[in-house]
Image (tube, rainbow, N blue to C red):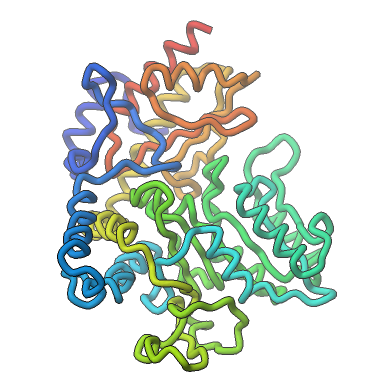
Length: 424
């Protein structure tokens, strides 16, 4: 049983007691035509813009205007090494060592580059395991990797599925897959937090299972970075990748993060697709030298990065540094628990939460399954400026983000949900 209570006054009291409540004021909250804040619950798709982002980007625009190409060395934040300004903060956020992390490329690009190195199939050990409801981009990536290596994607792709009548994955079913087919499996590529259900999987256990059968293990943390604490180094996974525009609030299509475990940092025998930003920094501009790969995650960079995107990431990471993931995670559990409590109190059989009830097995997303769905419930929420997102066939995804969502947001959202359900 929870200690949550019904009523608006309770929600307001929780906000008054919330030590992170002031951070909401550091974000641009979209407003309706009357100047009222939208109820924004889609930080799992695109995070809101920090008010500081404009200042961070403007600094680089000013240095570009005043210094031109010399900004690479003379800017306030020299562009040549700008990615290094992000490394320590990002490593801390995902539980990694600085040598294991770099901000570069975009998410699916990074997954492909990492699979070049860590998916090395043989004629007998070539299959790839993904969740049955993996994000489509991950599915397309592994299918085309299989085909690139000359395998039938339908035969080479193994799906880790929920059991009949269930929505969530069971780790014992992955154990069975590896027990039965482990000798044929080369790679596990798993979403650390499933985009559809919001289920947060045990990364360390997955890594141990995969490695017990000599499989490489990679994690897509698109819905995990800035949301949960994946502790990537301690998990033992071989690699991971994530975007920064969801919970990390860096703007649409912004750059992605990449993790390669320290145990692979100095392995020069790993195959890879390289570019000049993969090369030793001290001799990069000598131009006419054979590739001298940088140790660690930096060795998977290709080109000099877009500075304006990195400036937006820096604005966000500086805020995360200030707050700390421990505090964010604690509020996330409380805020999402309150959300779950209110929805359950509706006692309406038209909707059901399919995200795990255990706070340690989810981030801040709750996925609400709609019975006999026709998307109208989601559309009515949107018309009321309650911004959630719809995922086929029947789920409304809602993410009360601890940096900028309040308990009152959650209360007002569920009140409107109740009103709409009562009308149907």
